[in-house]
Image 1 (cartoon, chains in turn brown, orange):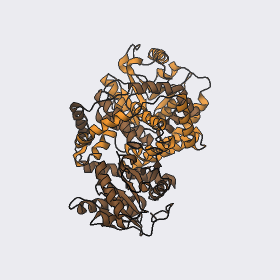
Image 2: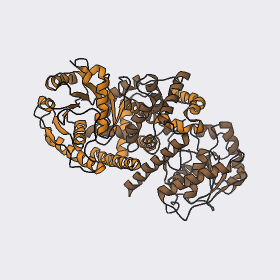
Image 3: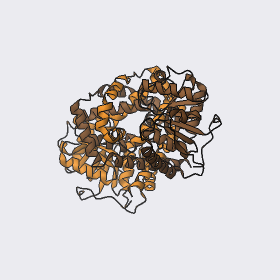
Image 4: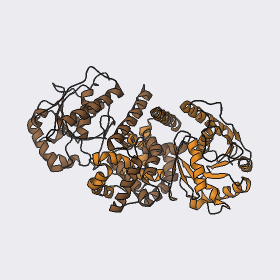
Length: 316
Length: 316
């Protein structure tokens, strides 16, 4: 990594990013920001949150360094003793509080009172919308939803929604400057893009288990070695373009559109009954084959790092 | 590649695989079979099919060699002058005819008349089922649906369904011996697993475009850099296990199951109207940015090869 990339809008007269809420997502963001040269002021309301945060951030920073190479230009990470201290000197604020509208709205009023007026306030919310969260802002133009995909220090995607064009541009510049892939929504939507797609796929994955077509681990194996692998290279629309032969998507829609619509009508709409949940839990336990969540996470991260390194190789 | 891997059931007294139907899928299978040491007898009813077949097979063989290293033990590929000649001496038959039940049933009766009784007859069908296709067999025990994911010489997934346990075992051994990932369905199903998942995801991808939430290329970019990348490493069920914190999938289902069910109810069910099809076609053309289908295919294949090489690196 050769330090942080230039961003489209110049940063303010400082280099400080505030991270508000330091669970899984806040830890991961903090590591990424610091590796790309920003000084991070982190704050969380939980008692004694710092040791666990510090350990997680150290591990994540090692992963970012392994992927992109080290740098002398890394920033610092410090634990602030109050929200006000964290945001006061920041030019960017990344909020990662629990998914509760009143809780976040309360945080934003404290943030607005303490932050400089030019500071962008970004929310990592995965399930709430800009419209729900922006109702009580004094200056909502500077608010953006910036939803990362877990874990943000490895996954490139950041989904953005902000009605204000200048805030949107600043957000694109900021996240792309961290070598993320910023994707801008045209319209505010629950679940943004990625979680809507993930939810639609999982509904059918659960249906396949419910109907007895295949068990949990067969479904996951098919996904990883089939569509998942392909979608890590080409998107869903593009995949059908390439499945349409020389006539591409136009040919595909004309000849196979009706059969897709028929298939859509056969997809399931399962209910997560206690019995079905039990089968899913048992299936996942069988697939985990005795590995703990943190062992599985380590193996996922290693797989993601290999996949990302392979992509980087392809670009050069 | 150190020649073909041992298969669980011993092959017959010869090494010949017949490939019936030599379009995209048949070409790709032929290349894979030959690279793993089998002698391929290929047949297609189209006039003058051989030159295009030969060119495609040569290109695919180069890709398999680049991925797995060359071998002195590669098999030969010859064009048979009749279906009967192709299947007569084969121990394995891979049928890749168009997706028409009467057409395939007619082929199977000719295949059964000419093939040895112990030969397995495998169909690459993506949208038809074992139950539909097996109605007219004299000996349907030896029939298996073996659906690859395009392109089969690169994509590991092969989805299998056969009620007969011995045929199922032979099929698992055969495809895993080609370093594929054979996934066995418990129940015959339209779209097997992978195309059901792909169809469910695409329905929502189309809905997102239809609703104006994001355009075609934003949806594809979000997928490739978000859920697609993650699903190339961990399956959908496992991803929620890791999203549940230390409590895993059990915690996830208990706390977030109801919100998933609510989200399922907000997913769309678009109609592929001419107007929507036009927007999808225009969006894909914009995403393609002037690249032809074959250029995009080459770029997809290069991406897949990088991803597969990265996986192989992780295993060693």
